Image (cartoon, rainbow, N blue to C red; front, side, top):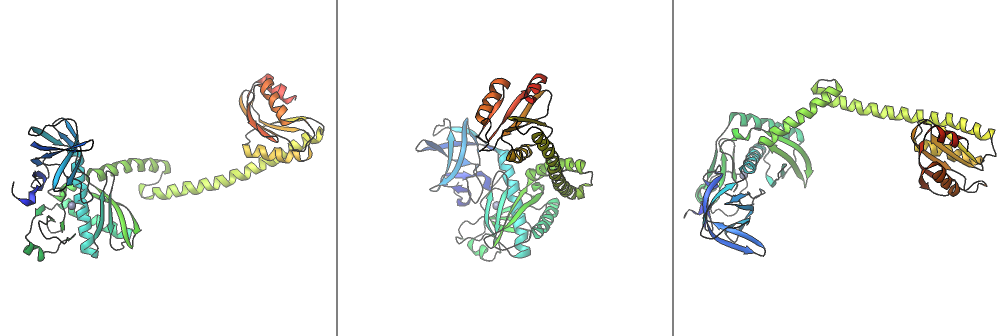
Amino acid sequence: MTDERTTNGRTKILYEDDAYVSSFKATVLEIVTEGDKKAAVLDVTAFFPEGGGQGADTGFIGDAKVTDVQRVNGEILHYFKGNLEAGSVYECRLDFEKRYDRMQNHTGEHIICGLINKEYGLDNVGFHLSDDVITVDLNGYLEYDELLKIETRANELIAKGAKVNILYPSKEELKGLNYRSKIEDLENVRLVEIEGIDLCACCAPHLDNIANVQMVKILSSMSHRGGVRFTMIAGKRAVDDYALLHNKAMEIVKLTSLPKEKMDEGVVKFKEDIEKYRTQINELKETITAINMVSLKERIAGNPDAGIIVYPAKSLDEIQKRTLINEGVLKFEGIIMVVDDVDEGNASFIAGRRADASGLSLKDFKEKLMSEFGAKGGGSDVMIQGRIQIDKEIKDRLCAL
Ligand SMILES: [Zn+2]
């Protein structure tokens, strides 16, 4: 209990000696109140307080839920929801699945950054371990391909395995050591050694052997403040991610009927095809509009004094209908209504007139459509649009308008 390296304030820290402690007995020494928040100081703990880019452990002290753990004024405070009493002994348990995931990812990051440091002399100057990915900032630029080579090397080392040791060298010993993340204060420096691979100052819990990292995967990289920011995952996260992506990828392989090595080419071809078809569809639409325009103009020429021309047409979109009406009304005093040519069911329509046309107002026509044909819709003085429920009788009456 007097060893400063493994205590913090009044609390002995269990993960310093064994990062795999997931449950333990502890006495509550004091309950600290901060506004409406309560925190317990324990005689021993395996809960990691937030620090160095890694979040706090969560879990339970007795039945009380531990929501956050922080180092405050030299003490480790376990913020909790529920009831705890000072002086009582409780069974404590960590959310160890979350902790183990973080240990896998954190240890994976040590391997990657250790190799980058050895190979390129770059340092990790920013680190954040979220519940999704690890984000690392390097103080120099690396191409994505170079990061992928490091990833390959790291996975080879993981497959072989290497012990992870926690060291507390003296000030004198430290001076002769080459390690990453050097800090000014040489008191109680905690080094994480991956035998033969890396030596780095770090306060967090790690795995005992890199074989348990399972695998690492670099996900992305981008230029950042003169260096590079990359994201990575390790452990079960990476294994799960591989399974997810593989299953998704196989769907693409099936769709493209190409070997998986070429599925990206298949997707590119799909995209090119879509662009080609889109162009063809637009050309066809223009042709269909032009054919309908000829037909509509013949209707107008055959009955130039009509108050209303109802023009049923198949497969016209809104733009085509508007184009027909806009051109049709140029030399026509009445209203033109273009409606989907269906015998039964819901049809959409657009109707319009010239603003200075002498015939029936669009407002009156809209009311007629609503009251006599049950149409629904709205619009302006020159263009209205809506829907109408068509059957044989309604279609005949509409066409007779
Ligand atoms: Zn670490």
